[in-house]
Length: 573
Image (cartoon, rainbow, N blue to C red; front, side, top):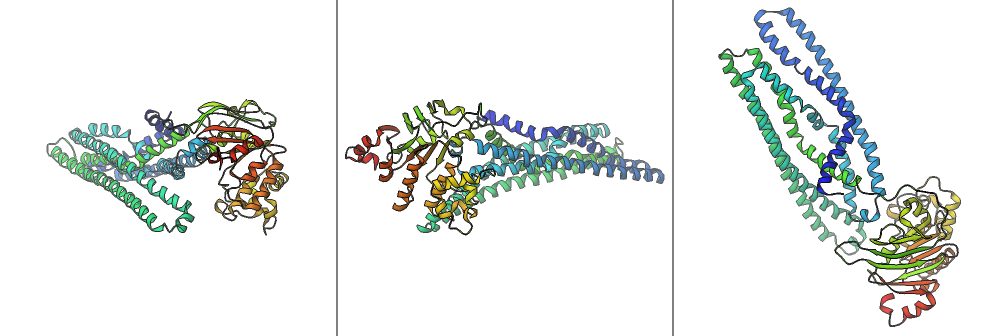
């Protein structure tokens, strides 16, 4: 879907969607603006050929009144054209911005994880690039471009001896524009890649600031950043030199065109093939012919950036979403979760992370998943939640394929608590309520009490209105984990999936969480990835994963002795 040809056509589809509705009006206004541009050379020609030679002051007065009216009308049309482009820019900000955010939020998790975080931020910079370009001089130059043929024909009719000069100038500008597009476009792509590499490192430094400070890594990381900064600056300088060279060459070419037109015109006047007024008018017309071409060369970087940005935006907008619409409103499931012959791989050329996994949980009960690092435990949880789609096999919720349900339905039926327990900036209440404004206080309190959150939040001066800080930094890791569990319990889902819920808890907090999990398991299916002996002993079943396959599974009283024995000790702990 996202091959080069599709992306190339997609750029033009996106540009057509943005500018298309306003294009007829822009062309009509540009037509009249360019027709009114004829008034100035005609005015000058009449002044030279009639007023000066015939002392026609009355004619001059009429011409001045007429040109003033033309200037006023031209100003009104240009203002109207600017307003249209501003509305297009507003549509980019509102409509395309909303569509982009909805698309990013609606993409499957595997797609979101396939790119670093800063790459998604750059997409919104692409949005700004599209907005600024379509409302700028570059689009006006493109709209004015077709009228070059009209002015060229007018010059040929008005001053035939100058036709070949105009033709050569137009060809020279076209060749300069093509060279500028290829060279500056390539340099801009290199600059963007260098900037992304630099920003990726900066983003990682900010995210890993605790590790940087604790391990005294500031010096080496600064050296890496300076290397990336140097590469970014170097590529920017190279792109700037190419762009400046093209712009200066265009300016020189414009001067050369004026000199050539004046020189050839002077010879034509001496040969009585032209008048002085015709030469002056032709020089004025030449500016209408050269200006759009020169403007295109000046704006080529913006147009190249627009083309690349539109291509990236279209490629993302063409990605398939998670299912958003519900085919039918089904009742609350009983909590039976089943994985059938599911295989999953992150890289088609690498070994599968999960191989033909078949396992069943619930309805009801506390179920544990154990295994060494890299055995596929977290992957299995994400697969069970529908965050990942299996390459083969399927996941069933109450005997129904989970892929038929929307993301909203799955999130309402299956609560998921990742290992990091990430919180968004906002209050405790907002995080537990998932920032839903219609969440009932009773549901929030019930989830908080069941997750053991209420006991420490109630002691805070602002209670549930306490700000959690960036990423939940206001609270300890264990408290963040409890809030994340409460968030997963809002709405009373029949299934709860937890990834290492005790990894950041002390012994007392672990025992407290075990009691809460056992209470949850009375009315719902609780599946947890854990190596905690206390949680393993409290569980009803244990599934052991090794290298993406199930090595052992069954009731806790059957599996735990073998898991803790010498034969399987390396697998479980």
